[in-house]
Length: 435
Image 1 (cartoon, rainbow, N blue to C red):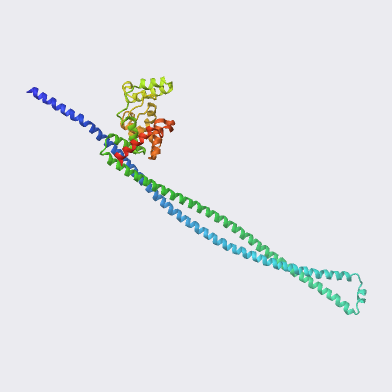
Image 2 (cartoon, rainbow, N blue to C red):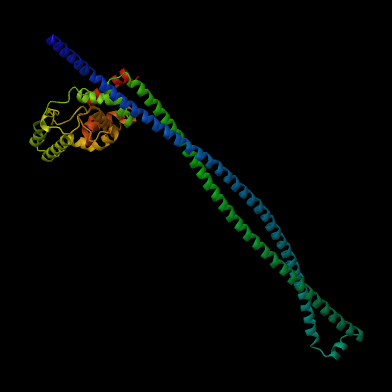
């Protein structure tokens, strides 16, 4: 009886253990999905916060626009007022010029009169000089009558007095006109000075207006930019929401691809295509040994510095992760070079260390591991994004994968057969999972 109970107990324990072991992957996958879903939902919240900030900026810009428009209207009114005053001043200047011209005509006329009177005086002086050649007796004898002699003397004296009187009057009038002309000329100069000041004031106001208009255009440009950013953020929210819905029915690799792609701005189908080509999505990560297939291989090819760098990097990664480097498989030595690539993304040790901190910041795993699928997906996505995959078109993705393979010497890989294969895999994944 006790033996039966014991046997039954053992069978029950084994059954429970089997159930736990069988359900463990599903529990892990559910946990991963919940983690990814939470991350994506946080991205949606972040995008919504960005939208709110952009909308606030738009409202601030609208207030700026109204203020600037009012200021521009005020400046336009000031310019119009200055233009009216300038036109009025032009009329005053024209009138002053006309008055000066009239005075100039009158002065010229007076000058003519003076010249005429000067001629009379000259004739008088000539006659006096002629008479001075004779004595009074001789002059009297030259006339038939004494009365004629005295009449001539009286006439000369009258002409002299009249001429002198006219000259005095004309000179006084001319002096008066000249003073008036000088006064008008001074007024015109002052008016021209005022006009110059008005022009300076007008240019100053116009410069302010141009500055305000330029600022208004910049403000409108910023508003348009914020509107575009809102559209982009709204599109990103829709895309992330679709990814959350999509994840519910997809396996782990798809989930990691979607998460990494959403973090880096590349297409998840392209990331899947790359990692399918690199390692069959983790089914073929290699069976090589770091010492034989990487370190000694580089030494045999004469790349001693490269051998030491990769060795140091690999040992550092294993030490940080608490992994025995001698038992951790890497890619085996191929016919065309050396092995040593790690995990699903097939990163070389030095390459992994170059991306380690970025991966840690995005996955929260510190240190991240090249043999952890989530970390490896993220590392590959970062590298592809840096290579140009964010363009999300064929040439951008070809270039990104070529750089993934060849680094700085990538050009020969852009249209290679292996890149063609990745592009075809990408199209297949896109059609199967995302279209």
